[in-house]
Amino acid sequence: NTNIPAPTSNLSGLISSFQAQGLSTKDMIVLSGAHTIGQARCTVFRTHIYNESNINAAFATSLKTNCPSTGGDN
Image 1 (cartoon, rainbow, N blue to C red):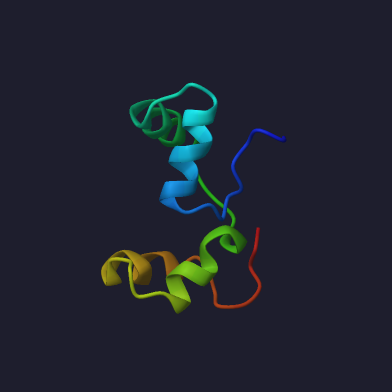
Image 2 (cartoon, rainbow, N blue to C red; image 1 turned 135 degrees about the horizontal axis):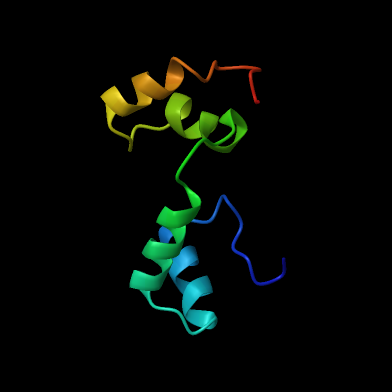
């Protein structure tokens, strides 16, 4: 796990981590997309949908229907 970027990494941090492994930004996008098909736990994105403004409001609202502001992490 030492070469895997943290789930809280920002875009520039992700790009740097992938480049350090000899992978391009396109590689990062393809690999990330392949790993995000399905479901994620609320704990991963709760802060983003409830506390940040840099997210599409309609998308945040749709996520909130399945992810309460507290609890429901599974």
